[in-house]
Image (cartoon, rainbow over all chains, first blue to last red):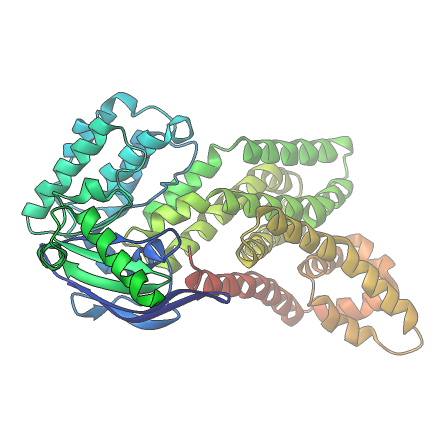
Length: 240
Length: 255
């Protein structure tokens, strides 16, 4: 569904993405992990067209996304730090996005109810806590039943109850056969969600494996331990 | 497109600064027309408003508004909307609001007190000057991510066009007064939208008789319908070119 072909991105002299090649298919739930500043968010923003790659191409349903915008109708995006106009209320933001999208699809308002956003529709965005802002972001990402969900650190800042609600929602959407792309640092949270894992470091992809392969090759039960093992082996190899 | 323009336009109208701007324009215009029976002094006051206040408020308000809507722009970018459309809607929404403020504040008293060609001319030029400085604001806000720097560039731009440019012209006039540079001056005025507006309006007022030989040359050129057309198209270029450059930059910006 999404194919990333030889993407490079430089910010000034800093190389953030270096020859990234990936492909994602429908029904997959992919975790994108790696240390801070390894280029995860830049990669995601490239797919969304918010960052324009220096070189390379990204295909969405076999069509290049460069200079395109329509394809974004099929993407729900939840940013790492949602930034919204300060003086708009929660209700106004949701209404505005509905108007802008102008879609006649049935809206998916599960999260509006689950997060009890009805109670805060009249609150201005600047008065919301970080976690509540994240709830609004999550709701907006799921609202239009998109084929692809891109979630950047979805559970960071959410309380345990809300993050459980969100996880359940993600699993539900996964079962509907949607493509879900998650970045996260909390590996333990991902255990029952993901089918594939991508590890990035310094702007390159270290490995891209399915969870089953990963666990088998390392003889571990948990994703976090399996990854720790791989990284240890790698650093050992480098030292010798 | 219309939906986004509407959202932006309504958002700006809610802003108290734009209301204050309209009110100040209205007070200045009505009081200057009310002082004397003759509308000439009122026209001169409005001329000064058009040449100083309108550019300053337009460029500053638009620049600050753009920086403050960084979040809004980011939000729109993740939606299925063309980048060009976002930028153009912002421009049209802001321009519409600023032109409306000018029209209500200064335009209505102008039309009531000086309902002749001069009044209409001033109204049109005031609107064009508003658009020029909104376009320049778009350019200055896209040049840097730093809000303070961007506003600084906007103020410098205003200072340059409103004050410095005239100083440079005067300097040139005195330095080269032995040479026949009057025709060259006509070309030089094209480099400042405020001077284009000033000359165009002054030529239509009685005071143009006091502008001397250079004034006569200007009258010969800008007074004709060809000159009028040319100076209006130059003002339009002053809107299109800065906005177009900012649009190209916005299309390639990383957010």
